Length: 170
Image (tube, rainbow, N blue to C red; front, side, top):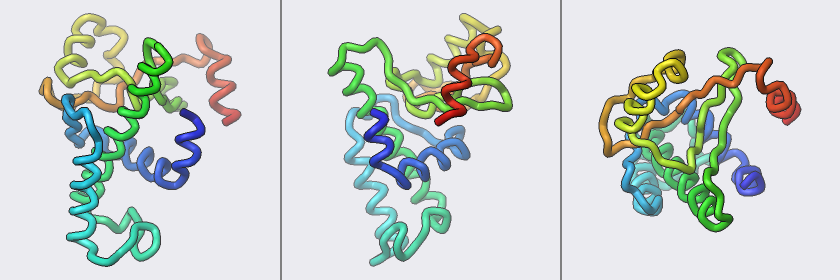
């Protein structure tokens, strides 16, 4: 998984940056089992808005309009979720995820969660354990048809010192 992310290079960095800035406003369908139609939609929107241009050559990601950027994020989110789900199933794992430690709040933010949770699921988890989720409430809606993105979980330095040391070294 790490090698796939490294090989994706700049594209993964763009995806992660845009995810962190906009995950609250993106509607990623829960039942999407193939990222290809969403890639096709992104490519169509890109070519319609920027005919004959190539991303990273003729136009930079930051210069794209919001519709194209949102389509890109949805496609990338589904692509990576599918990769992580396939790895989980292939290796018989219970769970796969890509998290980013957040120093300011001493928490982990889930960028890619290999276990899909709907916004309705998140509301139920919050109701079941309000203390755990209280500090990181980021309402996105209550729809069961869209994924809850950007879950944050406490990860205190004094409780998980080894993890913080390792994440700082990377």
